[in-house]
Length: 566
Ligand SMILES: [Zn+2]
View: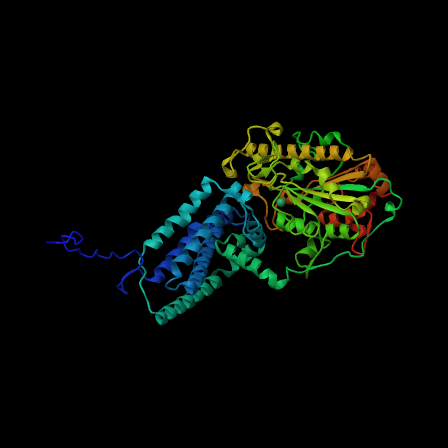
């Protein structure tokens, strides 16, 4: 008799099936070399469509020349990728490393194809500083499809392969040899095609930032190396000698300056700057001066905002030896009350030492929805926020910065509430190239209509303060935007090759009569100089000048308002 606990039939231990990728037989499976070669070829050809498209469209190249350079570059990319993979191809690293290369290449290819961007260190900084809200705006089906085809399918194929096992010493020898072979072939190819490749690379520097995924690795490496070039944890003081000028003695109305820091504003899409569509009806009714020839410091928020608030200017900012405080610190050193309101992804360090508020957590009915607020939220409760600043500073004067969401893309349609959707139909996809161009421009222009409303509302609020203070407003955008011209979208192209629409920004001034009186800058004079060439380099000095702050770091020649001070 069997006890009830004993099985009647003897149990056969289940046969252990080999899982894919692991083998008991060291000689079985694919050689690592083949995986390296196939992955390098896949990356060099299919994943570099953006590069091939750019080369085919380069002006001044015959189709024969373009084809020769494309073949040469494909070989260079394949060999460089193979050399890099040879270094990293060890038993436990090969598959993860190849997968990482494929995924980086797929995302790179998508962004370069969809938005016409290139991937350089500045673009990498933008990407690393992107918050959750912005990421959500970028996700779409064509991105998913691209990543699926370029990365997920080949990775799936890769992970199903059984890789032949090799001892550590042999592996090191193989890797060393394939590295040497790839390197030697690379030298041969470069020497053979040097002439034609060098001239293209010299004349079209942006092409090198299309080489995928090496562009992403290079950009990431150079961003990671920055702390070694400059200690980012140290911020040196600036303008500690700042004092308030003569206009403050015996003042009855302290100055109240509102600095609206716009986002992604294309100067040419403002009707007050000559645009054919009525995008700025409310500002048109105000006594403003809108500069038509103003240029940005960078082509992205991360590049422009820190530069705008510094005294280095565009030429000096990138190569600055150390980080220094900026405009807001100097205003604070002078004794003024400063407040930063942020309806965006943060102030990029420029408001770190002054009172600042993010609207991110606000839930104001009618203005906030889904973790995002319309820019008008910054006017909501602003009097209370200012009243909370130190009284002795407020008595001298107040500077408030409003950092807009503005026309932040690609989801332009989210930047205007229904009442301001003047131009229809709107592109409601974040896959911009799939929209009709008119619908894309409509969505963008509606965001300017809303900015027009925000600025006019801000002027309205400032006018209501005239009994107690001398108000003024300055509106500048951080950079412009490409809306599909030459197949380019969004912004962030390297400055030297970026189209003007990414660099030309609105710069609007409104001064109340009391502010005109105390600064002795007149609107009438400003309105005579709308075409004068100015840039973000002028911002720091112009604000200090308007606020009559005396300091050794103020340069009168860069103060655009000093030209109009009577
Ligand atoms: Zn920006």
